[in-house]
Image 1 (cartoon, rainbow, N blue to C red):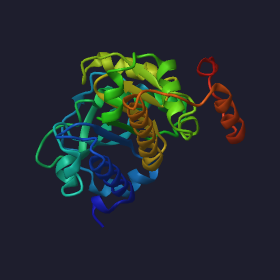
Image 2: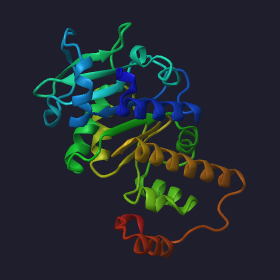
Image 3: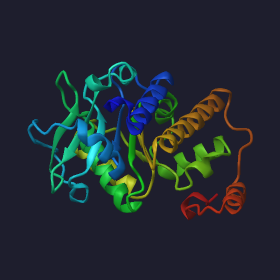
Amino acid sequence: MIMRDLPFVQGYIHMATDGAHQGWHERNGGNLTYRLTPEDIKLAKPFFKYDKPWVDTTVVVKNLGNEFFLATGTGKFLKNIKYDPEGNICIAQLNEDGSKYRIVWGLVNGGAPTSEFPSHLMNHSVKFDATGGKHHVIYHAHTPAVIAMTNVLEPDDVKWTRALWSSMTECPVVFPGGVGVLPWMVCGGREIAIATSELMKEYDVAIWSFHGTFVSGENFDLTYGLMHCVEKAADIYMRTMAAGGFKQTMQTQNFIDIAALFGLTLPEKFLKD
């Protein structure tokens, strides 16, 4: 067996490929990181090499010290991962205090983890604490309907959550906590990393205005499904607005009924008419 055949690497490749097929990853757009489980590390360790230098992460994530992350490479195309995993992705190990990383596998032709690595690490850190370590995946995609929607709806968490929930019945079930929305910020820097991590303390979905969507989840299927649901709802919203706007839509009581049926707790701020 080689590294690319390990189950978690295959899951990563499938998710990246599915996102590319959706049209969410033009050129080198978007990125994906996965925090390895102890079982993953045991399987992957025979392939690790510890000859690369430690690099400053630009953020400090002490609760993730010594953790390993599978990540896309900066400037790499997600559509190419399935053809050449070793050249397009890497596994990075954090040092003990979570301030530096070193590449222990992958990017055989050189390179570094995605430029959004600081944002990913900060959000992994927040979700690690918020979920008791259950969340392992952070995914960023250039979802076109969501980006279009940021051009017509102001960056307000309540307005966005209600708009998405009202567009498709499944939405309150898939993301009962709602979504958070950021105004436009320069990507790849410390400021957007901090702002996104603040949203992720409350939400599993963060919308980046004029840029795309950032989501967190337990595994590849659930995280991809969350991204897909948000983007599909945004597409329905934009189609409805293009057709003349909502003539009828779901009401607050409908959301309450859904929550009762599925045993969900919906935040009160999203249940006000």
